[in-house]
Length: 179
Image 1 (cartoon, rainbow, N blue to C red):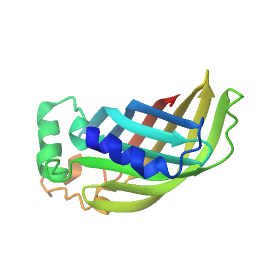
Image 2: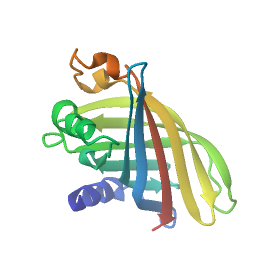
Image 3: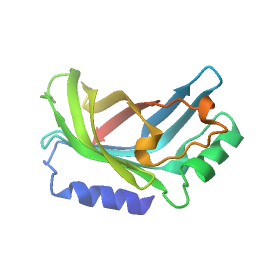
């Protein structure tokens, strides 16, 4: 994971605006699947995030094995059969956001995030609404969006296809401190 942090910092090093860089090592990503057969949820609280307010850039990375499921068997199947976590250990996002943020004024600022989401050795362009909140000198980011496993070459066996939604809801929350 240390290598991931170094890679993330170097990726953003050309984009850093001094005094406007915020980061966390304990961000949250959860995904949820709801069907008439079964509900599935997994959550990960080990997300590294960097937000550069001045350059309007952001990046996230996490280890896929960091997702925790309520049922151990679900977690095992997720890592071994679907995500192939040993082969594709990381998920990441790098992109930009539009909208103005006033660091001197606490408040919630709606933004549009555009960038590239990579997981399971596949990368897709995404554009999602989000909010960035300035609160007591920190940046709190939040978004919810949907992804299709097939867009990331994640094969769902026909035996369990009815148990997993065609689109998964993804929730992201970060609480970033100034660097």
